[in-house]
Length: 415
Image 1 (cartoon, one colour):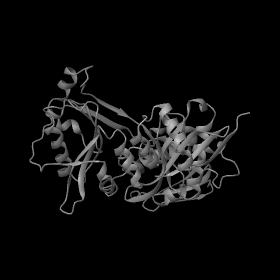
Image 2 (cartoon, rainbow, N blue to C red):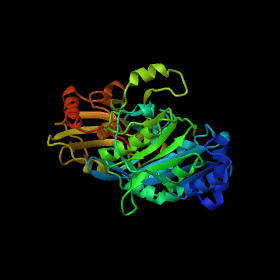
Image 3 (tube, rainbow, N blue to C red):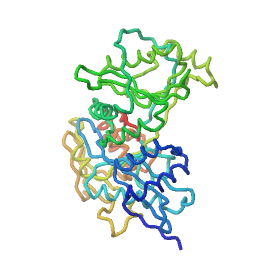
Image 4 (cartoon, rainbow, N blue to C red):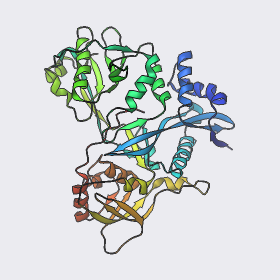
C-alpha cells in the first residue's frame, strides 16, 4: 500500500533530497552555486515536502507577495515551485500538496493564489483560471527606431541583488502587477545561470537603482539575448533601456523580451515585417508570439469584493458559485472552499453576503471563470464561450459594461 505523508519542509534535513529531485527533472545542474541558490529559494517561502514511503519525493514552495488590483494592494500567495520526482508521478501527490498550501493560505485570509502552469488543465481542477495573454517579441536591436543620448549604464551583478530587489518591489505598479516580497527570490532569479546572465541599469545620486534590466544570453557573442525582466517607472527610463539594447546591436543580432504592458514595441522597430520574412526559420528569427502561461484564483472572496471599486454604475445580482477544490478538502482543513449562494453588489462600493433573492437575476459560474471576470482578463460576454458561465443576457450585458473599464492585467514578475 502506497503511504503518502505531507509535512513542513526543513531546509537542513531536506535540501539534499530536493536538490536531487531538481537535478532529476532537469530544473538545476550539478553545481555548487545552484545548490546554494536552491537553499536560498527554500528559505524564501513556506515549503512543504511530500513523502512517499517515508522518502521525500515532492516539494512545494509558496511565497508571500502583493497583487495590484486597480489602486488596491491585495495579499498574494505564489506557488513558486512544485516538483515531483520521476518515481512519484501519477500518485496524486501534486494535487494533495497544492491543496494543503491553498487551504493554509485561505485560512489566513490571503486574497489570491497564483502560479505559472506547466500545462493548462491540471490546476483548473483546483479553481485556477488563465490570466491574460502576454506578448513575446523578438527583434534585431540595431533596427530600433530610436536615437537618444544616455549616460553610460552600470553593470549590475549578483552582489547587487538587494538593490535590485528593492527596485523591483518599489517599481510603479499597474493593474495585475505581482510583487514577491522575500529578497531571496530576486537572489535566486539572478543566481541561476549567473555565469552567463548579467544586468545593466542606472542609479540615482543616492545610489538607488532607478531602472534596469536582467539579461540571459543564449550566446554571448551574437545572442539571442533574453531579457528576463526590465523595470522602469516612466517613458524616459524605458527609452533609456531600449537605447542600451540598440547600442549592442552592432554585435547582438536578436533580443527576446516580454512586451511591457501598454507598450506596442513594434512601433519602435524600423521594418518588422521585412525582418520577419528575412529571418524565417533562422537562429535569429524575428517573430511575435503570445501565451497565457500564468493562472490565478480567488481564495478570500469577501476580501476581494470589498476591495473592488469599479465605476459609479451599481449592479446587484445572485451568484451561484462552484469551487472545484472542495472535492479535495476534508474536515482537517480550516477552510472549506467558496461554493455557495451569494448576493453580490458591484460598483464604486462593493459587497457580498451569503443568500439568494428571488427579485434578482442570477449568475451561475465557477471560481475560475469568476476570477477571470473580476480580474479583467476576459470580458463577461465572452466567458460563456469557453467557461462555465451562465447568466441571462441582460445581466451579462450589465456585467460587461461594468468590467469593460478594467485594464488588462499583467503580472510583471515571473514566478
